[in-house]
Image: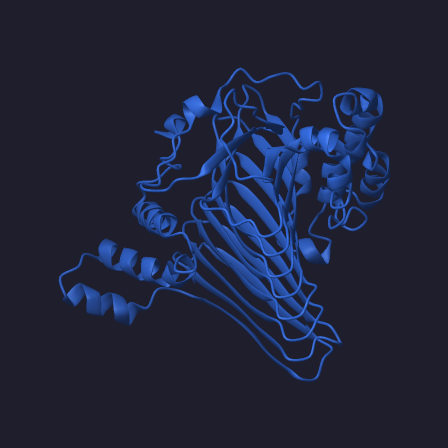
Amino acid sequence: MSTEKTYIELYQQFRNAIQKPCAPLLNASRDAALDAFARLGFPTTRQEDYLYTDLAPAFAVDYGLNINRLSIPSNPSNVFRCDVPGITSWIYFVVNDSFYLAPHQPALPDGVIVCGLNEVAEKYPELVKKYYNQLAPNDEVATVAFNTAFAQDGFFMYVPKGVILSKPVQLVDIMRSDVDFMANSRNLIIIDEGAKAQFLECAHTADEVRFLSNRVTEVFVGENAVFDYYSLENTHNKTTNITSLYLRQAASSNVLVNEIVLHNGLTRNDVKIDLQGENCQTLLCGIAIGDKAEHIDNATLLIHSKPHCKSRELYKYVLDDSSVGAFSGKILVAKDAQKTEAMLTNRNLCVTPNAKMKTKPQLEIYADDVKCSHGATIGQLDETALFYMRTRGLSEADARLLLMYAFMSDVIDNIRIKVLQDRIRHLVEKRFRGELSQCTGCVICK
């Protein structure tokens, strides 16, 4: 029996159990999503968008799923301690695929809603209906369709018109299980007109079993709104982490997306940003550090739909041992998107001969009055620079570390939360020194 058929029969057998604890709004699109998944099948390297990453074997593991919504006997507040000195944030948790409802919820500004997705779909169905499942391409991407069929909860954030959050919202995703486990969770974030917010999402693992996390996030950024989205992965080598971020910008909005992968097993990050209004500004960037047999694949699509928009994209990889990196970045400029300015850059270091990097930057332009560029490089550490630094008294290890650290610095510079920027610099340095096995922000990782 194929893996796809196993999950299709699982859904059919437990359809009522999957839908019973969920709001009608979440259940409305499940059956159609499953039909789409049955047609698409799990992605393999036979498909253009997955040339370098075969996800099918990762799904073939016999995972447990929490279909009956059994509570996890774990208080995430007891195992997580934020280790970013000086940062203050509103902290929330999703354990596996369930929003953790803390006994004492933090006080938020008037009108701001942060809670579990299932809860908000029950309480405010009209608000959620306007946005939920509007960006996720269920008919095109199998992992998204699979998520829509199986996800029962996740994270919701709404910042109303004109509200400026004084500190970041932090979501900590913790995978916790005694057996191999799969979690499908869903995030929905709405930043209304003129609002301003910063959001940090951290992915962690609590146990040494095989995990598969399949997470879909839809983000709507309103006119003149400002939104920062930071994602940080610090998991372990037995983790498959699949994230799909779909973001839509209205006119004159300003968006920063910064993805950081410090430790992982197999990671596939998909990002699609649609600049749907004039005068949008977008900065999309990321760093990936791999060693051992880690595999990191980032696939991005920036769509310039309207004129007078600016975007800049920068991804950098440092790959050691036998790790594998992949990057596919595309900028699409529509016919009416005149006066577009867009730049895409991918830079990569392969520290050892066994490390492999595959990169495919692309431009697809239908307008004739634009300024667009794209480029990619794959190389090794500069031997001349290494020699020069060693003549100044540095050991070879320290010289290599400084060069790798400097290579990553311009992406880290784009973090607009100063204390987070400083902390990421420290974690990247520890990662290059081999001192960081997982994020020291988690008590369980110490």
